[in-house]
Image 1 (cartoon, rainbow, N blue to C red):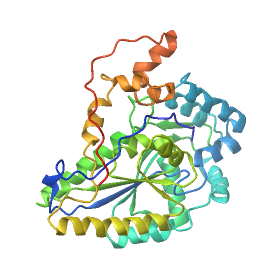
Image 2: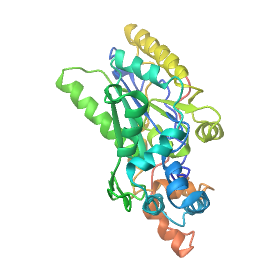
Image 3: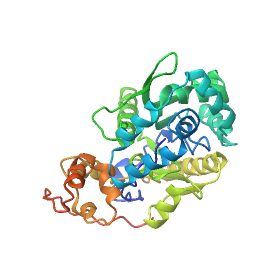
Image 4: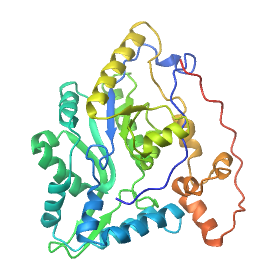
Length: 338
């Protein structure tokens, strides 16, 4: 897939005895979300196809730079890349099957999730038919069926002459707004629990590898970043709390620890061990109508383009850095670690 643009740093979820006191005694259900390319699998499914059956690696690198510079949107560049393919689906899958490497501990981690009734969801900017075929092949159809894939759909001609993404969020310059998808899933989970008279608060876990995952990661209570890749580097650069991991065996150990920690906290009539009280604040300011002043002042143009493409694309076109913005209250100070 194309390299997405760097979003602004997310505020960390910290334990606040006062702010979350209302959550006391509510045992939370864990829900896992994971990126696909570079996280579950070491390679990028889109890159494999583009380099072997489409525009080629050199053109793809040029297109990636156009996204980074703000010259073109992620969605526009992605449409060109997918549109460059001329290969039947099955033939294209052959090269992916030969090239892709799955995280060595992912399958055992996913089996752990099934055994402990922890929903596991893939959230990706890729194409759902491709991701489903890959999971069916590497995990088997029965196990793969336990994974919900939240991604874009696709229209692919039988002879492979035309590949067209069907964007999950057609009004977004990103095609798929991962943050919106996670919030929708959180809302659905809360509604299901409410119907069961269950007052627990879902614990949202996100697992990723690149900065394109940050829009979703900032909506999570716990963030895992693959060690040595760009997401971990970005989190370190911007003091974003995260848990580094080498394989999904590390993710499993940490989730087991978090479950025990959470249970001990709520069992002792305290607040849950981890909670992101600022998620609602981020959702309020991260809109097309309100661009926070601290983001406008950021030295990284990519950060502005990523979350507010409509607002800043006009600035890029006119090459005019001056812009009038609505007043947005300053953010409160971040909470201190527990």
